Length: 212
Image 1 (cartoon, rainbow, N blue to C red):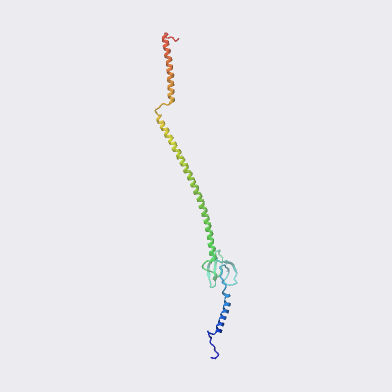
Image 2: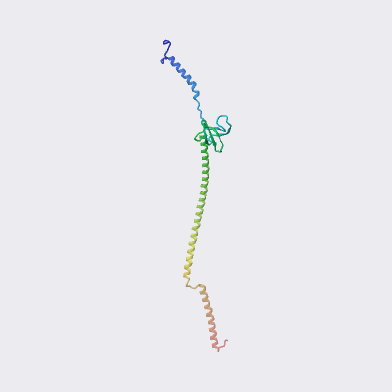
């Protein structure tokens, strides 16, 4: 028996070639099995059944991300209640404490849409306020221009009033020209009449008191 036992010689070229061949065959066999990668999807339709176990009547199908309230837990099943109030049994292995990635993504997308709507509303309000501010500034400028014109007109009226006041002050103790002309004319007429009367009196005195 001892003579029939042969030890593996690492320096034997035939042994080395055989080992390399076996390794190549094993590599060729195992490589196709590990070449493709698979991922578990989070898109799921989970049955809500009347009783735990296979073969129970399905009440509805729950999609990934559906929120459930745990009412009772067993080893492989859990009795739950949906957000709509439906109760039943589901496989507890498909339940998780955190929302699936797809549900979180949908929630983030909804939040993004809501924020976009709010941003659009804020931008519209800001644009309206900017237009109102522009109109107010325009109105203020027009009011300022009107006020400046009114002040200028008021200053001109005050100057005219001051000039008229000074003229009236100068003419306070003077006689108007029309009065002077009237007095002069009355004096002339009175003097002419008096002269005629005096001449008439002298003429009558010369003729004995008779008017000839």
